[in-house]
Length: 465
Image 1: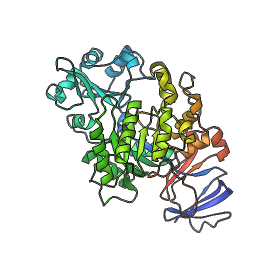
Image 2: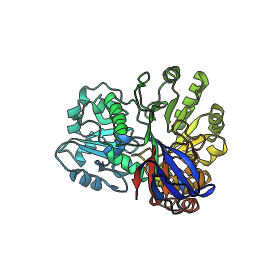
Image 3: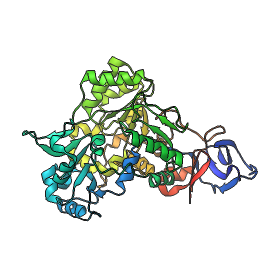
C-alpha cells in the first residue's frame, strides 16, 4: 500500500477525509478514494497537528526510568529515602533523582552517608541543578582534588559532596556506560501524540549529540528534533532535514549568576554565529540581568526565555517590546504547587509560571514538559495550565489560568517558532498528525492522553491503538 487515508475525522470545517502521501497531506474532502492507501477510520475523532514539546531532556528522561525515586510522592521522609536507596538493584553505583529538601533537609556527603554508605550514591535535586554524592562516590570521582567551579566546598576548603551544574564534568568521571537508549522515550512521546521535540540539554558533548541524531535516524525517536545544546560553530551540515540546531542554550544558574560582560559576550557570539539564544531563567534576578543584556546586545528573532518561573508584572511589557517568547512549564504547578505555596515568598507567588498575563500582554508563549523534571504528558500540562491546581487541591495563581483551547494551541506552534503561528491540517502540510478518539469539543471539555488513538510522523504511523 502507498499512502494513508483518514476517513470521517473531525476538522474545523466538519467531518472530512484526509489523504496522506509522500509524507504530507495532499487532499481534504469527503468521499476521497483510497487508491490503494491504508485506511484508518476516524469515527468522528478530532485530527490535529501533532503536538510539539518545546523543552525537554531526552537522555535524562530515559535515565530517569531506571533511577531510584528520591522525592514525593514516592519518598517523603529520611526513612523512606534510606529504604529506597537500600533497595536499589545491583552492587555498583546508585543513581537517585527527584530529591527535594522536604524529605531530609539540605543533603551533603555526610548526610547521604547516614542514609546509605555502602555503595557509591549520587542523588539529583529535582531542579536538575545539583547532584549530591556520598563519600564513596566522592572518592571515586576525585572531589578532593577537583577544580571545577561547580564542586562546592566548605569554609575549610573540603568538598561538601554537592556538585552544581557540572553534569558533563561528572559524567566523564563515572563508569563509561554511554548515553541511555531512547526507544522507550520515543514510543512514549508517540503514545502521547507528540510529533516534535526540542531537547534543551545545554552543552551537549559529542557522544550525546551523536546518540541523539542516531536515535532519530534509526527511528528510536521518530519525532522531529531540535537541539539547543549544539556547541556554537558545530552545526553539522549532514544532518537530516528533520534534525536542526535550534537557539543556543544558556543557563543562568540561580546558584551563581554570570557577570554582565560575560553574559553579553556569550549572547553576542551566538548571534554572530547566526543563532538566537534560549536562556534558562528561573529567578527575578536572572530575568532582569538578561533583559539588561538584551538592551546592550540587541535581540535576534528566535531569542527565547526558558521556564520564566518568576516574571515580574513590570517585565511583561519589556518581553513584548523585545519580541521574546517564553517557553514555560505550568505542569510544575500540579507536581510541586504545594511546595511552592509553602516555600515561595508571598510577593513572588503572583509571578509564578505566568500564562494569562503574558498572553494578554502580547508575549508569545509555548508550553512544554521539562521532562524528566516535570510531567511528560502534554495533556496533564494542558490541564495544569487551565486549573493551576496543586496536588493538595490548592490553586496557585488563579488569575493566570488559560482555557484548554489556549493551552492546546501552545503545543501546536512550530519547533523553530514556539508561540508562533499555529500549524494546521491542510494540503501541503507535513503529515505529522494525531488522531483522537473523540470530537474536539469533548477533548476540550476533558483533556486526557487516553484520547490519543493514532500518531503519524512524516506520513508513517508511529502509534495506533
